Length: 283
Length: 256
Image (cartoon, rainbow over all chains, first blue to last red; front, side, top):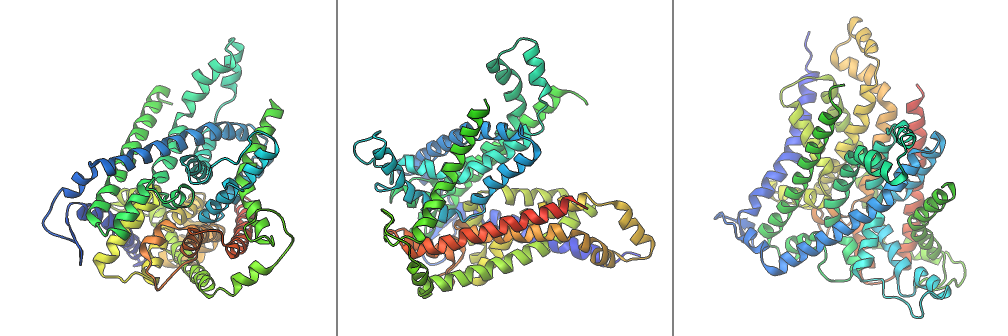
């Protein structure tokens, strides 16, 4: 007795994912190789003008700057997130939950609101400047807001949990006896970290970096609120191409570059996982 | 080492919470620009309440979040059932599509959906926004629900089948009640994701249907708005409640 439930469930799920998952990306690829049209957004003939445009110095500059800011953000997230995940993984079970919930509360709060909150912290008359002045570290307020530093601090603030969670998932499974074995064999702290902990945590590191790196370049509102009016991130560029310049082929081509970057990182990640699996040998 | 660890945690949490604390403080601060503490006031909450544009955007956001969370959880439950219970051609491909949706940066999803809506002739407004929000909530709903489904005792389902239950009846009477905690978690997560979204919304909605994050964005772009502090304080409170709720249901999930 085969009911109609099964095909109906499969059909609905497949339809949804094809219409809202596959089709939009195909249309985006299509739009990137069409010609700009003021009335209907895009029209024939096919052309690679949009991609050629990406190589112009003005675009390349934004791309490179965005890459630089994203890389600094990833490095900062890793620098803070790694010890955070390591310390948390070594805590007793009850404390683990507390720390993770404390980490998740800001994460569940609207990210735009938090970016706005960062602005109040970094402002010329903000708390940070006041504290530094009061402590006598500086004589005059620092210009923090509307600088690249402010943007990086904002991106770091928003993306840190995305780095910590995969790292924690990895380090939580780490067999601490390996560290003890290393210590018994006379290895110091640095050697144990470089030779044992770091290589075993690479899948977590990579997953965290992927989750932070590409999305960071899309967070246009952080650049707008903390970095001033300049075009800083690829996200600002795409927003400007779509909503202001109405140049859909160029905007689509820009995002195709982001998609390729993401795909490249995922491919590298799979390669890493496979190599880690073969290094461990058959279980 | 212990002291160092404590100092490190304190430092990170200071950075994460200080901006929020300042924000909440300024919501009650008489000083408009929050430059110093001038005394306690509730007038920014009144100003917020009397700002019709802001209140309308808040209503829109809640409607969208409620509808998107409900529909994403419903479709997510079906998808989770399809992926864990059924074997069919193209299953891995569909699963891959879903994971890609989850990993894809918001900006890519945003413009891909914008192009889709324009190509299909769907006007930008309530419906486009709702469909977009369901789409980005869906993978998170599926992952949450599938995790619970995989932990099921298969004997329960065999017993139901032996007693002559059809597939539809089995899903409705046995699987669905067992999924309850996961459905609630998935709903809460989707609700939060929907309220949080700035990037996708800014591309797929039209001027007729303004939502809260976009309204706040256009207000604070030009300067300090104390009524935004008041509203943000309410939003912080709301997310706190949601986190507590989800933790409670998480506990229930772990104790059978």
